Length: 118
Image (tube, rainbow, N blue to C red; front, side):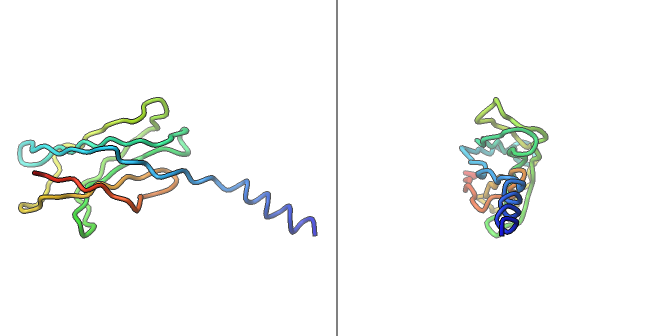
């Protein structure tokens, strides 16, 4: 009986806690040569290498990924923080893109930010 209680409890403590998704606080896009420079500001309760905002991407409304920006390290003491991606190819006629953030270990967020290119 005790094993049925203690083993599940021990396993629950052994599993990593999933942090909140990164919050996209803002984004902007500027024409730059043949492409665009996209800057995204994120906020996340980074705690270190096991739990941090580790990327963002630019998507079309249908989910097609146009570009990704990998964030190679945690930003524990720098919140919020902004990073840019240059040379993003956005098809002619597209006037809005979506920004989606990713965290480790949570993965890609379900939420997106709509970014107007006008």
